[in-house]
Amino acid sequence: MVLQFINYGKQNNIFLTNVKKIQFRANGDSYFVGGNVSVGDTTAERKFNVIDATDAWIRINATNYTSDWLIGTAGSDNKFKIYSQSAGLTRLAIDSIGRVGIGTTSPDEKLTVNGI
Image (cartoon, rainbow, N blue to C red):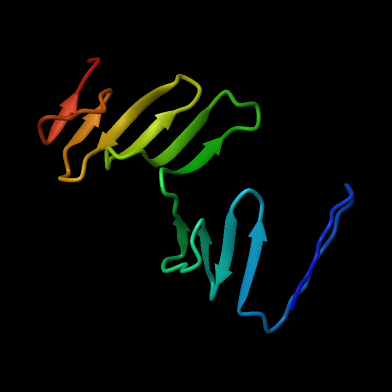
């Protein structure tokens, strides 16, 4: 089944029944599979997956961009991060062995705090 949807600025609804997988393509792939959602990968193993070869981020922001946050991982440093897009700073980082950095991306203890 192929479905083409074009929105010309009006409210539109699409209803699909008995469909096992839906794919949206917009500079990448997004899938809805059996109640799970996957962005960047077809497997959708969990309720929500974000998969990317280099950067996997979820963006959370206010509509006026005064509070703009990214949650995820970037590059090859293998750290989970909470990044303030507004400030241009990583606020929290957790490395692969569980060390937490607040105000630093390089924790060297179980908890490293910079800026207090």
